[in-house]
Image 1: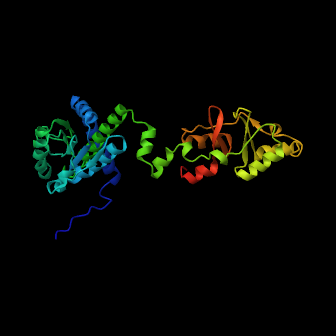
Image 2: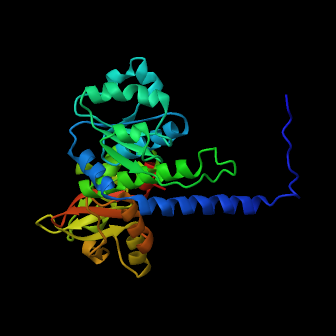
Image 3: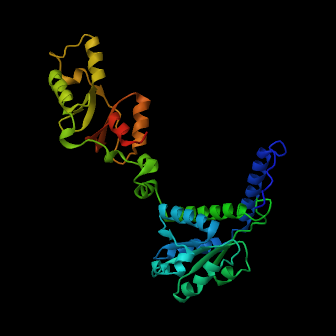
Length: 329
């Protein structure tokens, strides 16, 4: 077995090689930008109009990139999955349903495993969007819409390993996904529904998902004797109580800190009502506020309890401990 010659690090500058590769891939992306034309518009319109899914397929490195594109589409509102062309030949074509469209990826446009399934897909009446770097390839000619990569050379010095071409394909997939996302009016709330787990989902969690409600809420009125309010605060265990008027609207809050400041000024818990010690017009949250927004509010004003209001009435309570347990931070 021939032993490959390993260059001594003193003979080469790895940093310069890295920079050269990135520059060449940057150049490839700039060439891709120039290649995007009305076919990109047609591809987006076709995907938007389909009642089925986007079936992404490709072999080798194109397949790896295709898996990422399918995942990005699926997570941003466009139903999609990856189909391995070699597996498709042996039965997995049955995964394609009526109304699905095909996004076929091949740098050369001549990948045998991919071309083997194209006739069947066309016979079934499915539309094909192809991504290739060869306008005259078989795949490009057999597709309904062709997206041209316009890669002039790979970053690999041998011009063999997929580098610039795979980067451009990945970027083109992102461009499709984001265009579809914007045209669908996809929101952060939609994103949260598709990412219930992990840090992304947690950061998009809403206050209503972790707030305390109903009988858990510590509620008193301004004329409630302060010593009774202290009991309510102790029983509910949040170190605070919401002060409401006769219509149930929030007018203030009283916390452990308010009690300490009241006593320090000479106030008497036994001979005072709640209005003497409460803080008027407290900071509040709403049901649909993101937990991270509520956290930012609590940190800004150095508070640990936040009333959740609806039509000026308290409907929930969020505590700093709830946020810590939620995993948002």
